[in-house]
Amino acid sequence: MERENEDLSIRWQCELLALNRSSLYYERVESSAEDQRVLQEMDKIYLDFPSYGSRRMSRELRRRRFKLGRLKARSLMRILGVEAIYPRKRLSFPAKEHQIYPYLLGDVTIDRPDIAWAADLTYIRLKHGFVYLVAVMDLYSRYIVSWGISNTLGAGLLL
Image (tube, rainbow, N blue to C red; front, side, top):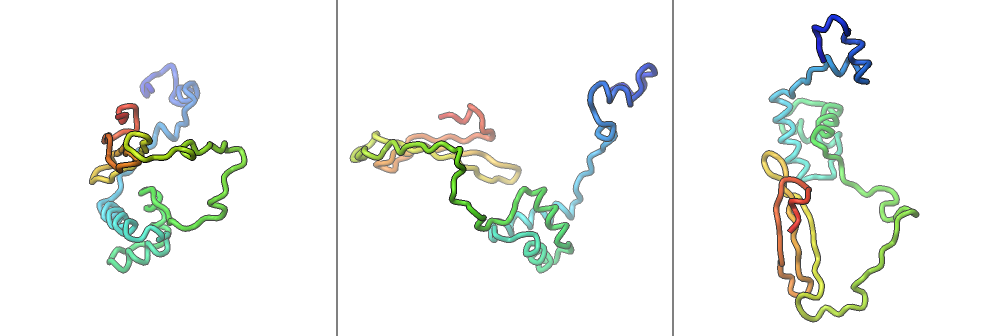
């Protein structure tokens, strides 16, 4: 964007680039130190009580001497990327268009090592983000055959 261009106005430049002018003038507002403290406390509460929604979360935060209402708690929960965990309707019914895969180990007897392996992928929360852990386990001996840690879910995580 050339703000000093006399031939093309900012309005015309934005139109040529299919860009809203409001996004050109937008300046991001950093969250306050108080909001950061509330987010940290909210994260701790969510680890202990993942079923808490915005109402219970705001009540618990007020009990811990933070001054905020339900709507502020809801917006901070959205920033944090957490929501209450509770049973949802029709959770166990697959969609009709989903393919049903056969269970390939149905007739296999696992009576010694190296017949069947299983892999699992999870994330580990750290102070400044997440790392991903993948592990491959032998199903007979429950021995971890291989594992890897990465900060991205890319091809670099392959074992």
